[in-house]
Length: 114
Image 1: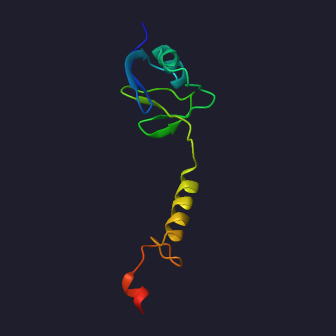
Image 2: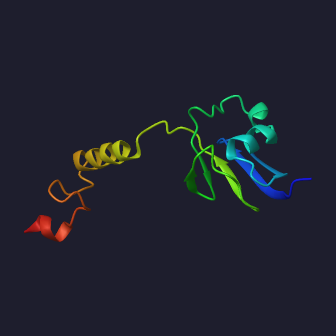
Image 3: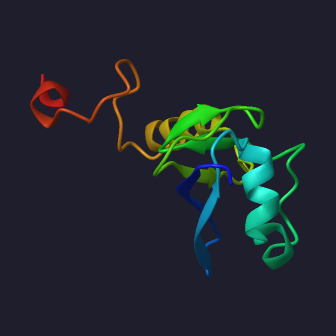
């Protein structure tokens, strides 16, 4: 019998999260463990061709082999580019006068009086 290791597979939505702990054979890949866990049957939106995966918050490949006590995290695709969102928020703050038009930082009331 092959040596067993213990792993977890996690996935979450805004309203529901699932953590599945299971033993797998040593040498199991991330993709094999995800399929074996059954988590894809619980969430219709998991597509391993689109969803990125990681182990303990570090990006990983589906072909990576697991080690004992690894936690596989299945990440949802981003709905917006974080850089673009910050850029739009900063532009709005400048327009509303909540940010300095030159530096982009907070408005300095002492400087404005000069």
